[in-house]
Image (cartoon, rainbow, N blue to C red):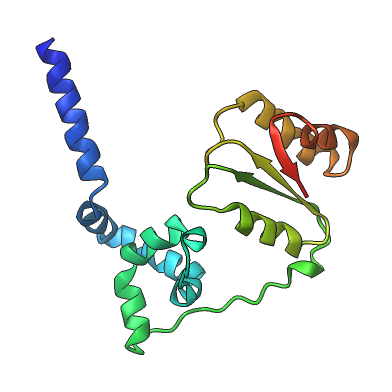
Length: 172
């Protein structure tokens, strides 16, 4: 009993530390990890500077957390010390097939964002699942769905049958 209590307390203490922004900042300020921050800044710095949600529906938790993690880079941009990269992607010119997956309980990647990405590609379809970001409720279904998409293509009968499956909330 005492061992279980100590184990429980240690686990709780670890989780509190893990959720601490100061711990995350310490880890991400180790020299090799600064490279990670640079890459994050390069990829989404411009988006973060323009990100200003006006309602709770527009809040993107990944952006909220990332703004804290790379705050020093964002402040350096505001001060004029560094600039951000702007990517001009013309998704409408992409001729390949795209399948966008969204979980209804995903707090980092909204259903609306998934729809926007899906709509921006001419040959795409959005799969929406009653699940979280990592989608772990129906592992075999997800695996077979992905296999069908990658092996025989989006518009073939097998992947389309997965879109009609009861585990699928809605497809585009």
